[in-house]
Length: 290
Image (cartoon, rainbow, N blue to C red; front, side, top):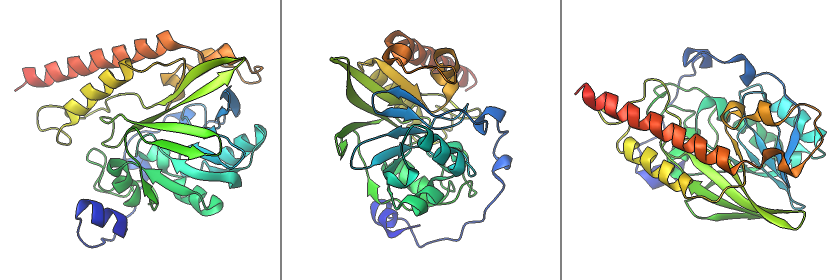
């Protein structure tokens, strides 16, 4: 583990991690690796991932921000999708992730090497990025993706500035300890829109919330995330998985860009409230077994 996290967390000396097959963690849905055309979501936000995994490019004249990476072999597809919307992978300057799980992080180390971009992450997810998933409290105990060095720790409420990009960080933990969403304001046709790359509060199978919790405070983290997201002013939103934000209902390959395509404030609130109900049922079920 790099010195950055030994200093932050008081961790011990570096340990050697043993790689393991990613497939051993969970079955991989086919759409996670299924190619899907890169497309403009809204303003300077582009989707450049697969049919099932959200990878997002935010562009500026001084370089770009890439959020997530998909699977280990996703780099060529991401490069092609970025090229198809008129940009270059090599011009990415900052790498971010929404959650430090292998399906969103496995190509980050390779992309960092190709671009020279800096990896920025929250403290909770940064630790997991640097040890390749070993310290993840749910799926950990093994290296599930290639470790990536974190260059900067980011915190809730900070604003990332790159060119004319002003991207606000929202710490939305629960799914992972350091899960994050990102928001910015975009002007289209003379109107300002609030655009959010939202990490949704989904609960992985087997996660424990209140009885022998997967990590201390996980139930409270989920509750705070739902409250925070319900209070957000959202016009346009995307998420870490295409199915979470209705990608295939909203957009068809080859569809001409229209600003209204992804405007969906009601859908965002409805999805947050749906996930909150699932969480409440999960907590109640755990307590009933005590």
